[in-house]
Image (spheres, rainbow, N blue to C red):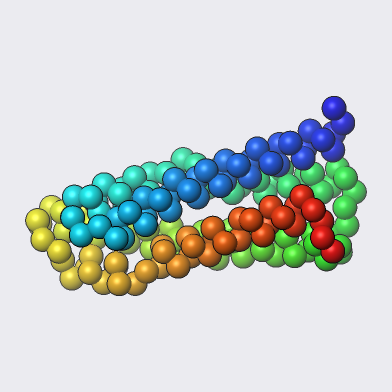
Length: 157
């Protein structure tokens, strides 16, 4: 196995961890957002908030590092359009979408905990659910996953 094959394999494994983390977070977010039961919302948002630092963040960091090493080992120039596009999408995903997802998720989780403790839908939870920040940016991340994977595997341009 060559160094190129090794780093390509590591990058794909890291990307699979990233995709699994994104799926674990967003499945719970979607479930909590569309459920009217305060307890189910609280458990779903808490679970999503727990999965973010356990799977999603490590997957994003490791896939970026492995992808960078893979590009370096294969002597790919960052001036190539497909690699530049992939890098820009990854940076947007990591430094804009991921933090906004995390902030919106933490806000909704805290509001759901307060609402569950009070036993009724609070205005804070209503505002957090109406804001849709985790839904919007999490969905954008889901849309970017196949695009980034397609760019990394097929090097289309």
